[in-house]
Length: 261
Image (cartoon, rainbow, N blue to C red; front, top):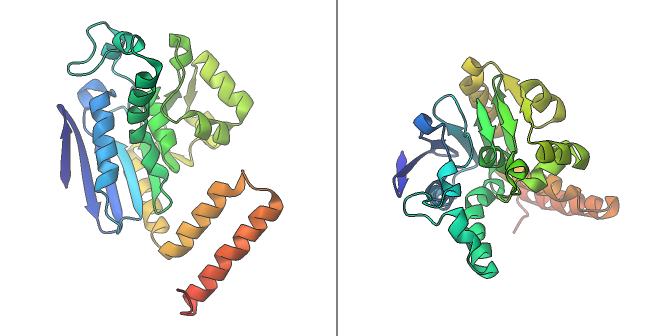
């Protein structure tokens, strides 16, 4: 197990061959998010070696993540970090660069060579919701509560969550969820596809284990090719998608027969 500490924030990375688990470890604050946490999560992604095929993101305590640490909104801010009021006074280019650095914690989860799974219990609010959305798949406890309240605070979701939210819920529902900041509970999350599976909280760990075992059963190259096909499908015309399928299958056939490069 690797313990990453960034300015007092702890994230653990436990890699066991093809499976890695990244854990948020601040249950006393419901895993509230800070720039230090984002730096630690970005570092976690950089630490994973090429053997890892599946990454599980989990959190200690009753909540996955209750969102951004509200101290960021105060003039004093979080110790050692620029406060949002101070950030707003910087030039546009500097603000853009700061937010881009924050986003790095949310971008690597959908790498082409990995499948990422969020194990979500309790609150997944704002930045917590976006962190769950950053993963390919979400297995949720039946007490899950998703919400995106940024708009109600005068802000926008800016940590990469808007695209996957629209892909999962569709534009009208995603707009309604963001504009109202309302909560999506377990039944709606599963019905709309936001959650791949909802289980009793006591069964969350077992459900994650079952899924990761299944994900690791197929040959890696086949899973990687399939993920790439599915990820690109919405941007392709049917003709382009069929061409991509043919090219991928050609590579697989040659690999299986020992004729690949």
